[in-house]
Image (cartoon, rainbow, N blue to C red; front, side):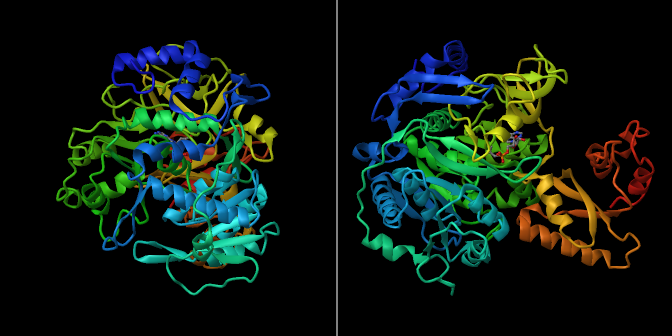
Length: 635
Ligand code: WT7
């Protein structure tokens, strides 16, 4: 039996037991047998959740790109590492072999060095889904620079906030990108952002859409001519196991986005090991994850996890609806995709279009289907199972977070019997716990509670960049000696977990994590607005949509409400990005508050979800009289 590749349900239990009874011995064996080190570690794990501090493989030296690229060259040099499928279906796909990837990453890394980027410097990457995105991520890792990828759908304001928070020295971007019929301008967004970013010395610009853009002398450089001149070899920087690998921002219930910091060895080992097992990856597979590399799913399961296993990973530039809603299945057929990993929101959007977009395609290459990002509803699960998997490909409903770095609760396909809407069992080495309101662990089955993790796993985020106190407060203060996820969950009669959703003020819209506070801050900037509250309500495609309650400074104001709604959504688009726009905006006389002045979002959530009959006792509110008025004017 190999601990690295679990093939049977019995094995899962055996390996799981090993991994929790003796985690150090277990992970040491995995680290030793399946990865390439420059120097062995001194200790496998040191941890203290009260500080909190976690160190895996302390003293070990390695470079993640040697594990993801160099070590495959002797045996897989001519194998496709990245299979790039462009937005335009008539443009040829690009097969980048491991050998070519090695050269391109080294060239890029040499350019970064030439431009003064050193180990530990932060580099912000703001690119569409083109090969340069994966290559620049790896180039940073090659020289030990810390990458911070910002999803290219974020606005200039959101970009500048992130650049400044991590004090990045360089931005890597492109003239623009393609998304379906549209082109998006990226360079102009970067230019805008950089008006507020004093620390940026250089901007490297990839050419994709050949648009006319502004290049600032001495600051901005076209990437290709620099790459053409650069040497295609570069010795990898020797990194400590706990050296930072990247920062990735995620929203919180309050305050500005949190720069989650991931480190090198533990992240590498856990993403590689989960990839192998959760997708039951074997050598000739063609694996495709439809996420954007701007999110953690793309970092862990387009770039690092697959490449660490020497896999072929598909990178898709476009959208599921272009040129029509059959595009995903066209790509699966064309490249004989074996594992397909997407989000419930995409499945629901495609299901809505009907099976005539799926049926014409040969999907017989598929072996495993995955979902991630939000709870998958039963209907979407069955649609996916029947129409895509033809009831022949197990669905892995994978629960995890930006903070966890890798998949935490998931079935192992062909081993764990699946159950619609259940993420099922903890992955190897993961020790979940459900907690009640008193801070006690809820034991046994058929129970629910707040989902925590009791013991460190290798790929957990180590801190919030620049704010360790906030890391402690957010994740390690709700319950003693536990990592608190922010999710609620239930455990069924056989011990399967079902994630029921966020229990804090984070709302997942189309699989994107949005914090209410940042959106409310944007709305409150409008000069006519006194205050606002955002809640989520069920939406058949997005999972949740956003409902905003807005009180105006002058409630008798004669201004056109539709215009105000447009202005508010424009403000949100400018401050955050179109993904955070509100579906509904209701103008209210006041917002329900506790006696201490806290807005009661629970009540607003019920009203927005058509559950106003379940409000319970509202008499203790500071202003119970506003509630009926809000109900009467619900949109
Ligand atoms: C939140 C984390 C992990 C990559 C994408 C999202 C929700 C994620 C599931 C799932 C139910 C899920 C949770 C979690 N979530 N996967 N399979 N079932 N909920 O990463 O943006 O950090 O969001 O997404 O609420 O806390 P993220």
